[in-house]
Length: 337
Image (cartoon, one colour):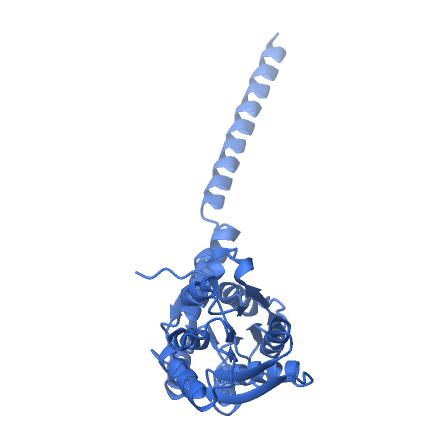
């Protein structure tokens, strides 16, 4: 009987000890886990430290506001800090200075245009030497050390604009080209692509090429000048977002809407307005929102050591009145305060 009682006491004591030990281990484990950072928050915190700068050609240009809109959406999603800074009006020297300041502030990544080889390749290379990756948007600097380009294939965009003009005019037109800049490589490519698309058409004649300095006013002034000096012109091609808008204003002033064909670039609200009226017959559609959105995501991938293709072309196509309205609207609509 005593032996049974001793065994009962022994077993009971062991059970209490085992329970106490288990409870102690459990509490220690909870305390340990409580102080361990979870993997996802750690990544999020690291991404919040990333500081990117987007430098556009022209700060208040509606096209670049769409790029900004996409970039900010991605930045919010990825938890990174994004600054949008650039010249108020297109100015290469000011653009370069802003890039230099961004690099001096030791940001984690810079996204910008590679407007000219002469001025932008050296500054991009200097930025990369400081271990700051660069992504070019809309306009590439292919001989620089930029990591990646995202945007339109500008030669192809000009080429499809030329083929659209041939198709819509039946291959007979006296054409004037108004381009945003003689120096900017993307504008040059849009002109070259157009010229190559129409050069074998016997009925297509390029009469004049003028520069608008990427402004509505200059585009209108150059269109007026062309019509005064070359009244035989009955078709216009504008290579920047504002060119066709300026051209359309003059066409309406001359009451030549029905007899003059206009093809332009992009889908700013004024462009859509003239497209609906029929003053502009066609426009080349780009995807600025997607450029900004994907650029930020690519920059995060670059910093984190993931592979990013060096060339990333966004969709480009020609649209006409019958293709309206455009979807998704985020690519084409800018809301003004």
